[in-house]
Image (cartoon, rainbow, N blue to C red; front, top):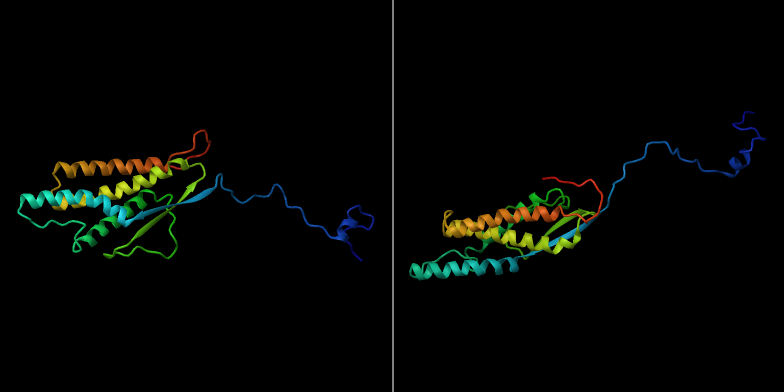
Length: 201
């Protein structure tokens, strides 16, 4: 009768009781992340966006009416042109998601519909590393909100005024500064942390 171990072997008793094999400490280990992640949610309210947009479009509308004898100007307060403003909202929200593509967390199977549909709220979910400085979260939310407003007003002024109008040029410059600010805030790190920073831009 063949045995793996002799009955006199010192490990035979523990073998009969049952023992669990010890994993090889020199075996290759699965890769582990050097840092964790947390999900940050950013909500954009349509009524807040429209409130800021109406403040500017209303003044342009009043100036145009006084200069052209009550001529109708496209504004976000008009039901006829309101879907156009939601299209611009969607356009610049998509631009923000493209800018933050390294962090955007999108559910599987969800696509953006290319139609003129009004909405109450849009959500942008970001998967941020633990070394990201979360104290700038409020600033990032405000920067994204202002960027969408500036983009919508730029499209509006290009349509109602002209691309050469000083107000349109100023809004375009604000738009470029806004996207730069969003990138800087998304890459802000906690002071004193040591890490291999991800710069996808």
